[in-house]
Length: 321
Ligand SMILES: [Zn+2]
Ligand SMILES: [Zn+2]
Image (tube, rainbow, N blue to C red; front, side, top):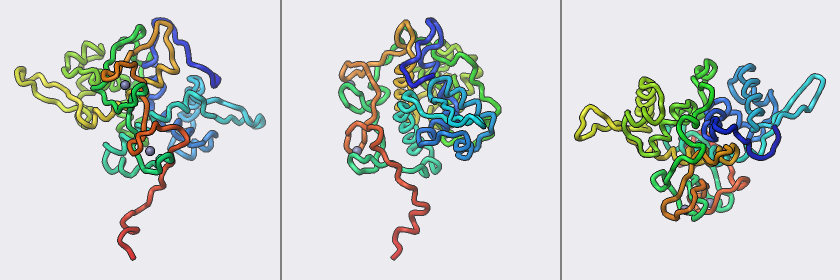
């Protein structure tokens, strides 16, 4: 796989959304891509940077190379040594990674608060990324976007082809972004949050749209309520038939969804046309997800963001003479 253009998908097969979820809905792959974006390229470097077994690391590196997110290059032949370089495809994931960082930092309590801050070099301020419409520049939330399936759309084509049931190797670790992975690292979870963003609130709606077994839907709804992403409310006229509404924390996940969909449709193209067509209601243009700095409102660009070193214990530095 080279650093080239988008992958042309099979007609009638898994669409861009399903391909994206198959690749990114895996905690090790997301962690590896994070380390790759910070300059790690060699097997031993990845091995030292994360609590990963040799077999899992080998498997994920191979997979990411097959999907065009890493470029495998031999740099020594005796013994054989390869390094894994980022590609255009993986480099364009940075807005989504930035959105994950922001959501974890804002919504997951002490673990999130401990994440390093970031500074926007253009304005010099510590910032949070703001989801905007590329066409008109306005900040957007889920409710501002009209979404409809495109020619390659539909729930059935939008889930990964192979089952992404949690593999044994992913249960015992503590991933960097546990709550994001709870939503993103499972095919039904991603589909469910997508359905919630499209306005579904009732069990029967989720069930008929997703075509998933009722026990699975029930389990995921419970998990999302426990995570604080959904809340159940009793329907006034139909007690005993709860509705599941997105909370503020759930709605705040929208930039991750929007940016991952944007990336998916840029790099995986179905011959029939896009999987999802989104319109920004206020300006009437096609919605292309774009991040801006919440401090200066300028678009965020790669190379203009600096990680601010974490100060171990701020209290020891403040108020002391
Ligand atoms: Zn707009
Ligand atoms: Zn700024």
